[in-house]
Amino acid sequence: MQLLARPLRSSSSGAARVGSAQVPAAGSRRAVMASLLRRRAAAASRLLLLPPPPPGPAGARRGSWALPAALVRRGALVGGRWVETPSAFPVRDPASGDELGRVADCGEAEARAAVRAAHEAGAAWGRLPAKERSALIRRWYELMIERKKDLATIITAENGKPLKEAEGEVLYSASFLEWFAEEARRVYGDVIPASAKDRRILVLKQPVGVAAIITPWNFPSAMITRKVGAALAAGCTVVVKPAEDTPLSALALGELANQAGIPAGVYNVVPCSRQQAAAVGEVLCTDPLVAKISFTGSTATGKILLKHAAGTVKRVSMELGGHAPFIVFDSADVDRAVAGALASKYRNSGQTCVCTNRFLVQKGIHDTFVQKFAKAIESELRVGSGFDAKTTQGPLINEKAVEKVERHINDAVSQGASVVTGGKRHSLGKNFFEPTLLSNVTTKMLCTQEETFGPLAPVIKFDTEAEAIAIANAADVGLAGYFYSQDPAQIWRVAEQLEVGMVGVNEGIVSSVESPFGGIKQSGIGREGSKYGIDEYLEIKYVCFGGL
Picture 1 (spheres, helix red, strand yellow):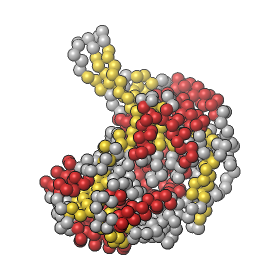
Picture 2 (cartoon, rainbow, N blue to C red; picture 1 turned 30 degrees about the vertical axis):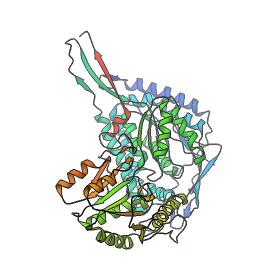
Picture 3 (cartoon, helix red, strand yellow; picture 1 turned 135 degrees about the vertical axis):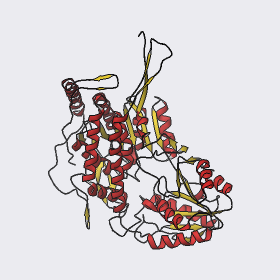
Picture 4 (cartoon, rainbow, N blue to C red; picture 1 turned 90 degrees about the horizontal axis):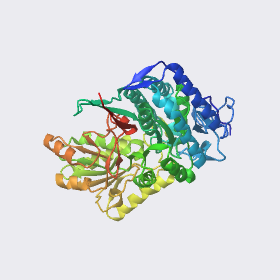
């Protein structure tokens, strides 16, 4: 397997002062970077580096689409170089099951090498003036926009979501680089009035250090930039471990980072198979050179990572499982509620952490809502390949995901639920499932107790506002929640009482770059995006000047 060995990159600048710290002048910084480059070259010699491959096709072509050869990379990105490993694992198209290609299967050695590379690059990157870091991150954003269609093609190929949704994800993903490029210049310290006249109290904010970034497959680009944008803006360096189902997007971002001039070792990627995931994850969570862990994924996995991180008391951010309620009160505009339900439930075929998992509809409008919701599902949703322009529902990520949807439906039906529409696998293939709506659902059914992560909408009928709040808050997780009402007093009551980190009021889609994303209870720790996101990668240092 031929993998590209790219040259290491660095940047230089003039003298500047950040807070109370003098940044080295251009010549001094160049010396620091030169020393860094020499250390990286020595470390890289311990890994297998191959010369650039000759121009040619990416190797995966299906009908009217092909993977963009210029962005498809198969190796790990360590210290600015593309690195081969002794073995590789396949990446498959979830729609067809066909192999898209094979990617380096990193293990403990590669993970530790990436951590060292990030650590060695950290001092120079953290000392760069915020303006210079901002310019480099901004250039990365611009390259993402320029290659929007190519990046979307990669997402649809490895994830299966419709190409229009994939293009939307690329824009959303890029927006985090744009946002944090701007936020890099807004990391302010503080001056606190002292109680003693001969003292001055200063507060500095400094990067935490190397951040391990562990991301899921459902948003293979956006879940990376939402974390990495903040980390790099703060002055941290990163090691990204993408999901084994969707590593190509992370590697494509690495190629664009190199093109943007992000210095070697600042952004590293260690893809690995499911078999190596536990070992790589343990390295990233226990290596003493790693200062911060940011993870998006299941609550169960998050708890394992927290245990690993406890040994060295690392900073952690966790965006874990959800079980979002969607409440429709009698006062709601039913048509708007149906439109919001369709968007909230079936985006990415129901495979999002904030998508609705339980619909609670008040008895006065229950039958009308179910009827209109079923009609909208049947008329507006179309299952198919993500590369078909008419498709709104692509495949689920794998057959295991399909089996979970089936298990939830079978359990509900066995306890008296009714299938209003859908309810079975689609004829297109083993990973395709019909958008499904269930009625006569109770809280004893599995689909109201676990996150389905698929195109299943169970509807529970309720009587009173208090009953709906009690059902919604009964979960041990609390990521997102939604409700529809036209009663102003009720809106305030319910918004304040829902035990979730994000609330959509008469709105089924709440994510945006400007808004703090995160949950409470067992849905996680910390916030991403918004002006608060960068704080997850900064340490606060108190400085007391005495004897003045």
